[in-house]
Image (cartoon, rainbow, N blue to C red):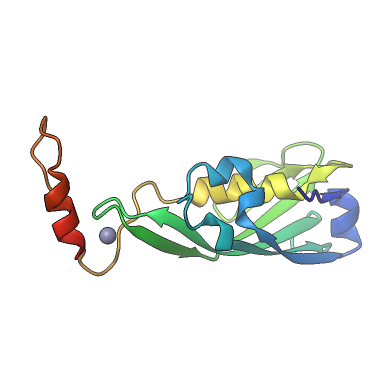
Length: 159
Ligand SMILES: [Zn+2]
């Protein structure tokens, strides 16, 4: 698997930019939570940019764009969950005072070898919906508790 390691403070001060498209299957921890049958076609688009003047401290801006292959928790069929979250991180050796941070601004410790892939995976794991559902009505597989689903009833529902 590809690794991208940056000196995050340097990256911010020099206002560098990297962007790439990665196979979702290269994120091992994330893949375990996704629909295994659809994962091989899935990609993660990202752009990471450094900024020296956006905030009072040097910062990084991360943009992600994904369509997560998951399983609908109502009908148990495949569902794609599109997400395009953005993140801003201010970089310093010590945690900035509360006031400087808010819901949209996170603190990141200065690091000479920050793993960009790990950051992306952590953010996607946090953003992952716990129980994705189709937005249009889909039929729930129904069986009473303690009873195994009748395989013929399940098949009938699919055709
Ligand atoms: Zn569904």
